[in-house]
Length: 111
Image 1: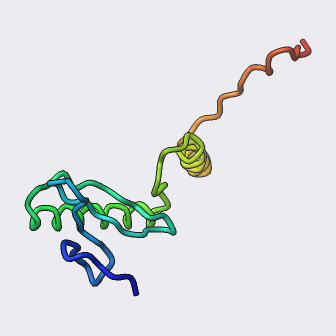
Image 2 (image 1 turned 180 degrees about the vertical axis):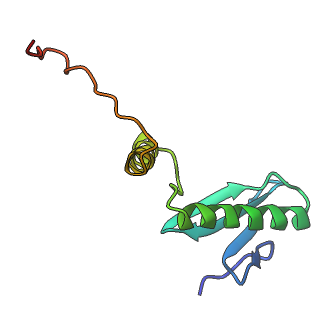
């Protein structure tokens, strides 16, 4: 097992690591969700506040994963896929509406 530094604290049965980087006064947090290692700054100088913020963020990321929302949303394709799935659900429920797009550039439609 990896050795933890003295200023590293584990919360939620070791699921979340709260630590401070060298030359920093603010606490950081790290945890794994859906195979992604998430590292965040809590922005807090007080350890108790940092632990509470880290716990809340961990639960937020778990909620995203559980509800099929993108855990890491840095890519347009992740958001686009989520939107397409949502639109299909609306169409299947009879709530959405179909819009027919014009022909691609360079293609003429037949009258």
